[in-house]
Structure formats: C-alpha cells, structure tokens
Length: 334
Length: 194
Image 1: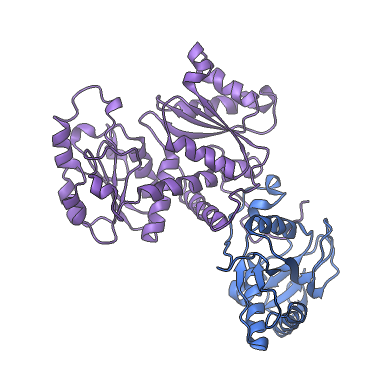
Image 2 (image 1 turned 30 degrees about the vertical axis):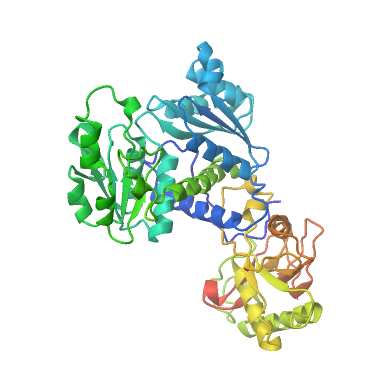
C-alpha cells in the first residue's frame, strides 16, 4: 500500500491546513491551487459522468451567516463532484437563531463529523477564530480523528480567498498568465473582501494591481497593501490595463454618505460602454457578482465578450474543488 | 516508496553505487518497436473493425504512448489516436500521503466508446495506478476492451492485474527502484535498477 507506482508527482503536498486568507499564501501554494483547478477542469471536460471519487466519505459543511448564492452553491457543487457529502447550514435555520455561540456551533459540527467547515460570517476574522478553536480543542476532544479544515468563504470586510483564486484562475485562462499583468480593481474597496484578497493574491502572483476608488471608499491601512492607489478611473484606463475588476457597491454595509449620489458614483467609477471601448483588445472585465447593472457596470459591458463573469462562476467550481482537494484528500498536514 | 526516479547517471556507464542498467537507449527503442508490433498483431489498428486508442498514464506513460503510436503508424500507415489519462483523483492511497499535483488528462476527440483502449505505463508494480486508471476510464466512457502495455513489469502486484504487453520482465526486490528515463522528461533514454 505504501508502494504505489507513480511517484512522478510532488511528494510534499502544499502544506495547507486551512484557507483563511490570501495574505500570507505563498506563491508556490497559490500556483499549486491554480494548477490543480486547471487539472480539475481537464479531468471533468467532455465526459458523461461529472463525478470523481476523490473525497468519498469526507463531509463538508457550509456554515453561512450571510446570504450567498454563488459561493455556497459553488462549494457544494465542488464537494459533490468529488463525492464528498456536503451539508448546508444556514444561520437562520439552525441553533444559531436560538443563541448558540459561533464557537459552540463550530465545535458541534466538528464533533458531528465535519471534515471541513466552509464559513461565511459578517464579522471579519470569524473563520480565523473558528480555526484556532478547533485546532486547540484537538481531535480527541471532538471525539474524532483528523483535524477540521476551515475555509473562509467571506468574513466581513476582510477576505474572500476562494473568490480571489477564481479571479486569478480566470485571468490565467484569458490572459495566459497573471505574472506581469496590470489589473485595475475599481470601486468600493473599503467594504470589499474581494478587493483585499485579490490585492494580496495578485501581487503574490506577480501582477501589478491598481486600486481605483473615491478616497471615502478606501480602507485605512491601504498604504501597506502591495498596490498602487488611484482616484481617477479614466486616467487608469489610459494606462491600458490587462484586466479591470469591478466591485459591487455594497449598500448593505454602508451606514453613511460615502458618495453624494448613485448617479455621481456611476459617472465617475462605473464601467460604461465608452470606457470599456477604450480598453486594449485583450483586456478582460471581471466582476465578482452579484453585479448591480447601471451602477458599477453598464449592462452592455457585463454582457459583452470582454466580460468574464460567467467564466468566473465556472472557474469558481474548479478552484473550490482544488481547495477541497488539497485540504482534504491527502494525509493530514501536521 | 518511489519506484522510479529521474536517473542520475548516464546510460551505459552504470557508475552510481549499486546501479544496474536494464535497458540501454537502443534496447529501449527496440523494445518499444516490439511492443508496437505486438499491439498491431493483437488489435489490427489498420484493418480491424474496432478503433484502437492509446492512453498513456502520466508522466512517462504519456510519452511511451506517443512513441508507440508513432511506431504503429510507421509500420501500418494507420494513425492511432493517443491521449493521456491522469488517475490521481481515483487513487486509493490519497489519504496516505500529502496531496499530489494533478497531471494532464486529454482524451482523443473521438472518445473511447467502443474502442480498444490500450493503457500505457512505464513500470507495473503494485497495480494500484492501473486500478485507478480503470476506474477513471469508466467515467469517461465504455471501451469495448481495455488492455495494458508496460515497459517494465517489476512484480509485487497487490491486485489481480496483469499486463497484455510487457517490454521487459524484471524480478526486483521491493526496496529497489526501477528508474525509467525518457528523453522527453529526463534528457536521455534508459532503464536501470538500483
């Protein structure tokens, strides 16, 4: 059993126990995840049965304290395509609504047999806390073998690493490579975990990232990010970026006047058709969704061949398969 | 326990400690040619009624499959479709080791339904890779028959699997390594035991 024939693959794994942020993810780890995602796509194309036995007997629980369609479905599909048992827990329909603490809920799910928790939470850092708790109480205390891997599926305004990875995967497919690409990230950076995760990941992968936002929608500490900051979208578009990532204006997180009016925001920071027409021919338009058409992106741009919005969703499944594979398929990482 | 590794020594000089050459570059070429003839004899790709598809198991099986296809087309004039099939996601030993990188999977455009599929690998050892490949095949379609061609059969099977075409049978000790080197991957051709 310890003598398989094929050892042409790497023997070390990628050394990932949880996926909590792209900040701190090493380039080799990020590239391994993207390579594996491409391999997943290859493994599934053109076949009758879209099912791999890789995670048979593993249980993946999605624990969502915030609404989501694409992220949750994407993780669920990814798990199912690899034969994991996937269970969805939404906060409103669980004991959370009876007042159970995050910690107790996580411990309960771990003790009930979850091998992986995919967590979305409105509080920044919640998945980190869960991972730390589960690591500390240890396996024996949970009455199980093996550790519980935690995946951050979006925590407050902090990070959304799987989204950044799927964006990078989409860019790799469209542009050939991420290294050396110039990516403009436009819009509500302050409230966007997608922007933060992308800023770190794309920089790690060798891209040049420019954040474009009104000063009121930039977070404190952005000066420490590996990015350039600009306030004039047209000036950045004149630099001929290889990709433009439009962020959703997160009205639900805004409790105050961040810009005078929706109309003014759309005029200054929206990707209108005339603006899209000025991009280089090869340039890609990304949007993490859900898009607010007419606000940050014109409908005609979102539907154009330049936009990779549906490709992002497809890439999302493959990327999440890759994440689950590296966290769950191999032996436990010490 | 690695069963093959990139060779450190050049073919022929067998200079490394305890290393024994099993096949030189010329031997390897002759062996591939002979296996190509055997495949032709058994499957008749140039006149038979069933299409023949060669599927290599990465990494070196993929290149061996391409070489076999080239030989077959030289001999018969018939072009045999070649593909590559990575069985990693179907392995039964995933939990025993850190996660591996995935290799390429690319089936010929015509698919494998109703074809005679010849799986090609460099070394046949426990049989577990082939078992995984058989499972993977099942999800890609339904071949009329599946055969197995290997460059080296080193014994120590852990499953009821045997090869239809064997380049060379080599009795080995479990702790030994059969190192297959191919120009495409390793810069030279040869097989050695250490």
